[in-house]
Length: 376
Image (spheres, rainbow, N blue to C red):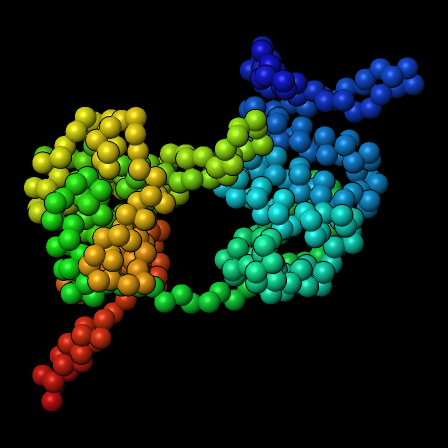
């Protein structure tokens, strides 16, 4: 049986077969081409490659005239079957809003390294859709990644590529991350423990485990074990742009696996959190932040609630992610073993932990310097 509206079938021998229209003869009759593979996704990818050639009105030997917009479209469809929905929607947004409008009308063999470099420079200076300045280095780096990947895709499928982007990169500005002082953390904790509710419990969990805001919003009571004193991170929540459907809303909430395998982890809980959590425990499938399996708190709402608690605590210029940096820094200050900390944070290696999440306070530097006095 074929997939809905697709000419892809599973054969009796277990293989998958795909059919596409190669051309129409003089009588207007369709002539088909056939492709085969061991899996549905393999055949799907082959069909996409074949269709971009047909839709471009050319055979591979006439590859010089293909438009980059057609390559981008085919690359997006090919990528869609291999990435998470949120990643695909990010790619799609960048292609449609930033890449295709500028580079899409160029023939592939006319896109030089110099042209892409000028395009990247323009995006850094005045690339925002609303005209208010340039895009962030992170966004431009993502755009370069898409262009490079789509060019590799074109080359792999036999199209001529005239540019080499292996050396193209954007210098990222080092962001100074906000870490709460010890006094600020005590003040915030005091606010959270006064007239405590589920939202305040959630902020405390983040402050003392370092989990991300999306991981907290997706957390269910079945992932908290009072008996084993552990928190299991298995899902994350985020708001993404809706795909090209009839949906009225431009964005939607999705709950998926965390962003990497390392982010799937078990975190030991401190005793004081266990005692607090035990008072609010609800049904296993219920979300921790609501106590209801059918109702959740989304990340931007949680961010707004945190800002209210921060204001009450006298804390300024701190966002929700500051809690994660604060947790990591406090762990280092009390002598936490760095490999264990890295695993608790869900990092692929300790370098990420050290370079991005560990911020030494001036007091800690003074204490370390004073240790040298024993050598005098």
